[in-house]
Image 1 (spheres, rainbow, N blue to C red):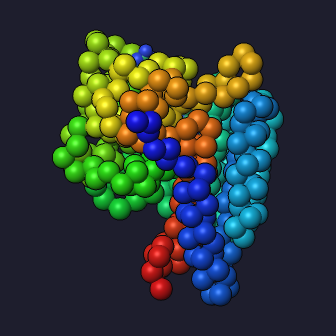
Image 2 (image 1 turned 180 degrees about the horizontal axis):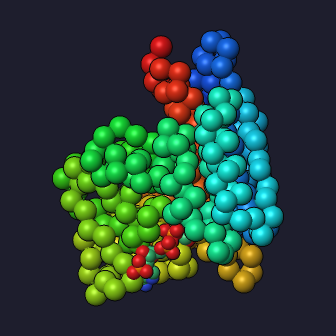
Length: 289
Ligand code: NDP
């Protein structure tokens, strides 16, 4: 039996419809949510991501302001811009596109964003709230992964969950979200011994490494839910995940494709975070009248 495909594109459309409804409610109250995106340098992938974010904002009626600064921008200049955006009432969300060119320090810049406007959810205050199980802005990719798992129809409670990768932007926060949903969570990384033995136990397997085909069907428990976060561009130009799809789809119960899985959900969650921030800054909550 082959796995059910968890359609991230379709789910992202649904999330964006909910976001649009919230934008309309805000608009009726005379408020238009605003997202500021700061891009430093000319990394081609970052430029594509920023353009995509702008396009999504336009579709949903969110104001987007893009600040494209040269790669030579100093930390003080960047800090001054973030400081201005923090005070700008038209701007509800601020996002500094990562990676930043050296010698700019990502942690220093992230720290300056007002946590209420930190729609990437990378500020230590928001990560701390996540760790403590308190309300706060959740990082977009992990939030999207949780929505995809929910869409698979599998309850997290009591399940054996394995996360491969421990980055601050994907692996660690998604592990924390799974824990919050009462999963039994194991995190693997580059020093893990016998990765296959651990991944084969997983009823829910999230892979966020950045190595094409690291996980194949022999490393997956039959019937497992597999979320492939990886985005790896092959020399042919094709983009593939960290999971070898053709062997995994024969074993898993449900699986996300690449592209069309986690990627579209990340951007949908950014839109949702921006509108949630706008609502919170105006004393309201997403999905509540
Ligand atoms: P990082 O490079 O920050 O982290 C990779 C993690 O993988 C590290 O924790 C590393 O371990 C671990 N790792 C490396 N090699 C192995 C191995 N052989 N076995 C087990 N673990 C290993 O990556 P990110 O978390 O930022 O991104 C991961 C992937 O997800 C990338 O392909 C990225 O492009 C993609 N991505 C996709 C997004 C989307 O929207 N679709 C959003 C964000 C990322 P250690 O800590 O020990 O070094």
